[in-house]
Length: 436
Image (cartoon, rainbow, N blue to C red; front, side):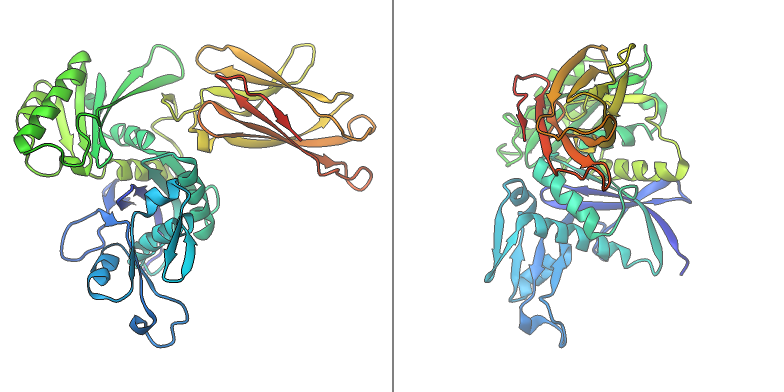
């Protein structure tokens, strides 16, 4: 079998995972099922660990299974079934399996890796050119687990990317016919967490173009736990939400996703939605959006190259340092417009007769600047331009993070002191302490 260049999308949600690969001949992503007898693309986020008696002779370690295989073995086998892994990661929990303690994060990585390995058995030879993983929650513990997944898969940073559901939805929508997004686009996501509504609108009166995403939470009305007495009640509840949202904007198209929309309970709500709008329903919107993003590497262009997505997960500030020259030049360390977990960078600079740095945060939409000074106390006196430091920026969310300074010394002449300085910042707060 010939070697395949694989461009993969992976969507990890609390209860299930989906995988898709870009079919170059068809020029679109195709989803992957882990069962031969049914077209089910929702791979259960369940692990099963076999007992020693269930294993093949010669297997040194306990055998792990994932997805539908794990569910089937959980019914017939004598091993242990492990689920709710995703939520346990967000709790930074530990999981006891027989007499051994595992970090939920490590089980999450194992689960995701096994899902991927099951799919890759379809290919004798392949190269993963790009894997884009999209997640329902951009929780710091989930993001940390995904970074560990990249290391586990032995992929470099160019081959692996994380993005949230909102950005994946935009990638999917922008690969549909343009007429479907001439006006605003509505997205209803109905999962076990409840019903959420997203409105996507374009602002093309300035460059770069902006995609503004607003969110409304209707989980108090439709919680996803089957609170409606029957389908008719559920239909009525959803119709109320629809009238409260899509009638406020000029909507070109509506997308329905999430397991809550399964079944035949939508009638009046669907009839109302379809009045002057195109309506699409399916479970693989996010995974296909991630796959489209992965294939952009091959095409060396991106449908969103001229756009900035404005949402709660995107950093709207350029971060740089004032060079303190006559022009007060700004040297950019990290650029705005990316999700917070993808906004990090590191530079090296030489200090010249100063122990102060002015950190500049520039709002990309308004141009407004906020300046915060960092005093670097305690470094030894060195000749001019022989104090080399590294300056790193990292974000905890879209509006807060830290600047990290490390003394790197100057070769053998002026060895490093190994001092590290950390300054927290909150662009809507007052906590700007520096720790040494």
